[in-house]
Length: 228
Image (spheres, one colour):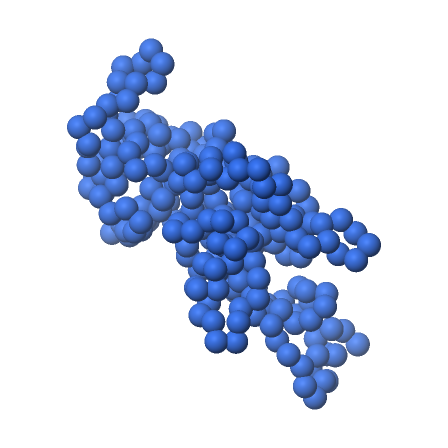
């Protein structure tokens, strides 16, 4: 008798709901994912997992995800969006657990804060160099990555991964890092300026011996706009 049949044959059984969060950041020219050490399984090592936990009986899903993120990583006040519900009956070995997945985006300063914080239980990993993950968390990360890549085409979501002030070259690097592709500089700048979502600050930044580049700011910080 398979797991689903066994569950259906029981007169009473419980379903648990959890939230799991894919936290993205960019560092060292790579898209990074924030992972935590999951409590060790009996007789085994502590696997790496996404930040996550069970939802309380009267707790709102979004609030649960926010609280979990703060409690397990110390991260708050970042862009957070619901991704998908994962409910395969056999996804958890102990009981029926349905998880509502989210993804969060972190600007460089917050990424660096975690990298320099001495907390071995929480660590950044390059998305293409992650360790084996708990349960179906690798599947959740893969879907979050696809969602992020797709939203670059019709929204301003990339700005959530930038500091308050940035050059257009830095913005292009964010796009190229997420898409794993090189973009034409002239066409990219033309597209960004046509979106009318950035404005010059009046200041400039010099990188090495290159000519100083104009600094821009995103007009609606903390909010993702959709491109018509």
